[in-house]
Amino acid sequence: MHLSNTSKYTIRILAYMVKQKESSLISAKELSENLNIPYKFLTKIMTELVKVGFIESIRGREGGYKFLKKASEITVGDVLALFNDAIKNEECILGIDSCDVKEKCALHDKWIKSKVQLQKMFRESTIESIAGEGTKI
Amino acid sequence: MHLSNTSKYTIRILAYMVKQKESSLISAKELSENLNIPYKFLTKIMTELVKVGFIESIRGREGGYKFLKKASEITVGDVLALFNDAIKNEECILGIDSCDVKEKCALHDKWIKSKVQLQKMFRESTIESIAGEGTKI
DNA sequence: TTTAATTACTACTCTAAGGTAGTATTAAAT
DNA sequence: ATTTAATACTACCTTAGAGTAGTAATTAAA
Ligand code: SF4
Ligand code: SF4
Image 1 (cartoon, protein in one colour):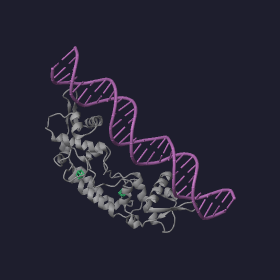
Image 2 (cartoon, chains in turn green, red, yellow, cyan):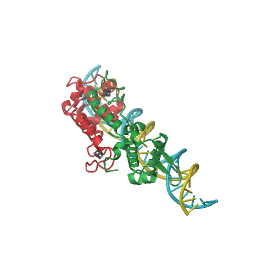
Image 3 (tube, rainbow over the protein chains, first blue to last red):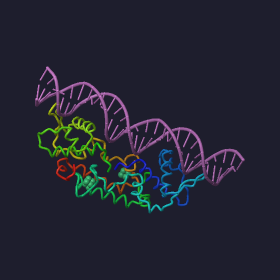
Image 4 (cartoon, rainbow over the protein chains, first blue to last red):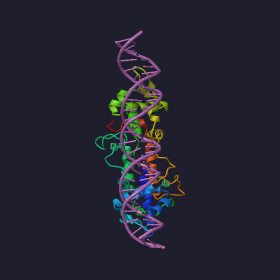
């Protein structure tokens, strides 16, 4: 699927955060070290997640990040949409104009099934629902 | 899915070519104009397709390109593999090490179904089979 | 034999994503 | 008050993909 690194990192960051005790703050340092994400790049992402209202930040010593929205209300699809990685309905897989069932491209019929399934999967995968799954972080 | 422009162009080029009369040569100029692909970029791709043996080129005046392989023996998956756009089995969707069912990432179980379907779809889509489909070129 | 039409080659430029560096700001601990 | 540990901001560097420019090589037509 070729998600951007930013999207990949964000999904892992949020999944990691939701597994920590609620109410406890999580620092960029902890995230960077445990998730193996370049510190400076991570803080850039965190600032964006704060701006968009997924998390909130407490500045200063003993500061850190915590969820603002509930993890059950943030989906993988939301993350992808935020960083422009979502599969857009109007986008033709072959890049010919915009997707239009009345004027199909050569791959349309074959692609459309996968496309719908992917969109559904991303839309239904809340951060909460994936946080328990898997062992790798 | 975010295919590279190179892959998108190539699929359209090959699908276009297979619809022309066999034995007739097709020039870069014709392809560029009819498919609306930048001429210089297109010739770069064509040279690559010649090198890899999908098509052959006849140089000089009245020259052009024609298939070397049969269109029924080239799949969309082959094209994606050529330009490094294929969905690699060993690649983790979240970019954590390599894909390993014994150590899953958070998205693994949800992603794997779409992944298998996509791979199958690309593998089974021959250029010949898609050339008839769709109206847009 | 010259010209025109073609592919092939080499070497750029442009852009966005990914990543890095340094500094400012904030606020608790000391 | 000072120090320390944290986030925020600004500016830059690096890389790969996309695209452009110019020229060389080839070959049929005129
Ligand atoms: S394939 Fe058809 S539907 Fe899918 S994008 Fe291209 S045109 Fe639209
Ligand atoms: S999701 Fe699981 S299977 Fe899919 S890639 Fe990540 S680890 Fe491998």
